Image (cartoon, rainbow, N blue to C red; front, side, top):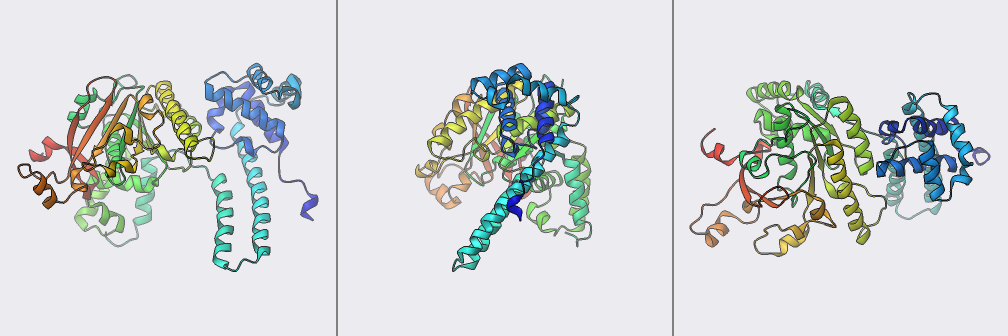
Length: 455
């Protein structure tokens, strides 16, 4: 019965999306996260949308003439119906106001087609009668998860919304010269070394896992927002709830582990509520969508920039940004090179510093001192070349115990809770290293001088 039916699709909605872009190229910022070329059922509409995307990636104007030229370059203009079809699309859409609605329709029908395809594949798994039922169930669940993952689109939300939701969720539990000036980090020595974060710069902050790069980035976002800046954060690894709780722990000075478990005493709970009030008024916006491309992020942050005026962009982390292909190895290195070039272009386009967190390769663990070098940048490609600043986080107390340290450095005190921020590349000044104090239980870095002076 189903074989006789056409798969779900809406040609009018597809034409409305492309037609809206032809009359208002800037509208692509509003729908880039909602719809992809593969969502279009009719091939000629998909080709037209791909042409719009190509122009957008290059920063070129999107209009009827430019799209016709782009299609012609790929020998597709005649196949879509020539300039006459593009004129038809323009005439069929009087305004681009409703482009988001039509994009959602295109995405929804594409999701239904994927569901039909997944159902066929799940049926094939069942007919295969595999001996291991659990493996078969996992394969079926994976197919459905992939369908759901293409449908869910998450966007920026303010920290107020995240924290309000946190308070609501935990209410019933038991106790437990803006636009032009550089952005301050809140760390005196780091600001002195970099001249603060310069607008238009791409800053790579790299470390091995569990050293504190996400925490440092969030600390910088919190301080900058406290000075009136608007910080946008893409978290491709952690959920926005996890990020918010890290900020909350640092702000209230409550143990992050106890906060997660909901085991705060009465005094700590009062501090937490006060901190929620402080953080909720800050201009911090978080997007925790996984598997995003630079194009996705650029569209979202440009829309936020138009609405709120972004001053700082943080991406956690570089290696999780999706490329155009699924390959790894040399292809992934090439993709990372393209990604860092696009991030640098985005920093200049928005005139904001972009902090991109990055993993370091395991080669660092092969050296006795574990001291990070530029060559340790994982899948490096042209990361070093494109970045204006490259900084590493190095912690000796994560490498050796106090006894091991005293044996090798009998005259030096054990650097417990101390983190070196190694500025390995600085386009604007010298390279050096500074030291910060790390309070692990509060998920917070502090100025070392302030820690030892009792401030």
